Length: 131
Image 1 (cartoon, rainbow, N blue to C red):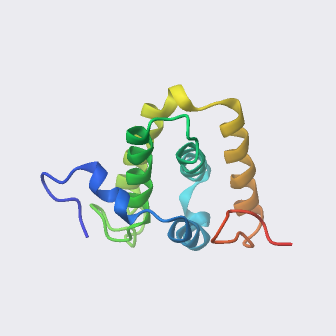
Image 2 (image 1 turned 180 degrees about the vertical axis):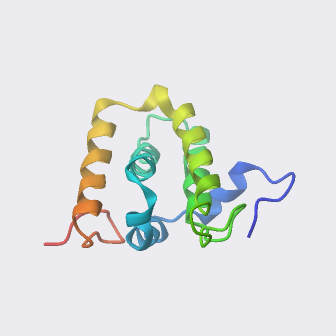
């Protein structure tokens, strides 16, 4: 699926699911780079924050839904350039999320980033490490 002319970002929210997100991260975390992985976790934790307006959280879900799709504007299977559109969209979402990013969210994202980079034992259901 590619982003079509006239398609709104919010249309991609339907592609977000926690299981699919962690499934993709398990497959591609080594090739994403630290910043992109950190941004994904920032958005993931912001989506759970009920103090953030639903419309704003929907935009975060859309950015993560777009990230999950393997065949988007620039297919993720292309070496080197496959994630450029994902990086651009996640960066855009993070820039719009700055007002909501607390030190606690940053710490949670960093902990998850360290967990997934240090271990391939991340669960698909809740993002916690298995014992």
